[in-house]
Amino acid sequence: MLTRMTEQFGVTADGVWSAPGRINLIGEHTDYNDGLALPIALPRRTVAAVRRRPDGLLRMASTGVPGEPVTVLLDEVRPGTPGGWAAYVAGVFWALDRAGYAVSGADVVVSSDVPLGAGMSSSAALECAVGAAISDLEGLDLLADDTGRAHLAQLCRRAENDIAGAPTGGMDQSAAMLCRPGHALLLDCRDGATRLVPFDLAAHGLELLVIDTKARHALVDGQYAARRADCTAAARALEVTSLREVSETDLAGALERLADPVARRRVRHVVTEIARVPRFVAAFETGDMAEAGRLMVASHASLRDDFEVSCPELELAVEGALREGALGARMTGGGFGGCAIALVPSDRAAAIADTVTAAFARADFVAPQAFRALASGSARRDT
Ligand code: ADP
Ligand code: MG
Image (cartoon, rainbow, N blue to C red; front, side, top):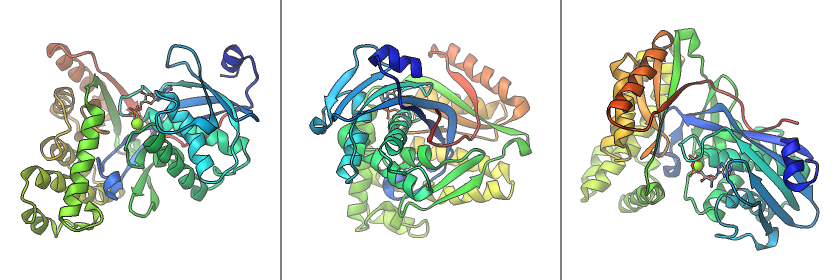
């Protein structure tokens, strides 16, 4: 990365920072409903070599995006400027500036092994790698503890929401900033509270298989925004600030108050999904992995039938994994493609991956890619 900076901009980087992609174990489409989620950080990371500039200019290049570097003055950053991928980088400078931190310009060169748009949150990995770099280079010290990291995660989310224009919840940035190796992060999006949950599958002879379906269906962003709008409208109809306020015991009464069957399905997903998260954590903590698997299956059914965000490739991956001996499997991430995860006996992992690959070939789908997910660490300085 240091030599890439020299090749790209003819200068020496001040340092190299990185942040991870993530996989969410359970609690999907809940973050923007003030709900609960349970991500792990992946070993796959986005790396940013950065050199501070004193002149308020931003120059940005990515090995993942062919073409000329993008250049913009920090003062000119606003929604839509710069467009494209550079918004995720420039937005972080903008958000820190808006929050009152004195930030200057920079040369930024990015490289990543988090696939873009695959549901492993390459966007937050990019924002958080850049956020970590700015924090260190400007002496903001936001990486030192979880309070600073949670704050920086929020600013990275603002970059994504306001400058890149993606109305996402805060799970991805929290995962990239707060996860620890060997742990999942129980995240309460109502108050930002977090708890680390030991994630040791090997002790149970299990592993978490990620199946990237390689499907990237169009309309994803519009569908995501539409689901968000459904949830906001339902909360308004129920006269609550968010769907988090509807407990499982209130659910039947809440559904009766909603005339629209689509609204009823959306609410049922969000309320039952939030309730599944603490049960999943309890199953993990008591070693009841069969129950953890059942909760994954229930989550998937709810996302497919009530939230309507699955797709044929995700169905095939989940069905194939379950048929071949997974304890549980579900789509993960926003849906309409991206990844499925399966909780599998280690000695079945290869057979399960093969079964799913064969099923994809028979269906004439692009070949999926399966890999084992190990819970890894958060944003950091590497060099
Ligand atoms: P996901 O976060 O699930 O990968 P998103 O649609 O939220 O999918 O974010 C993907 C977008 O983030 C890309 O289209 C690109 O604009 C930007 N991005 C992420 N990583 C990189 C990278 N390494 N280089 C350039 N752009 C990136
Ligand atoms: Mg993203």
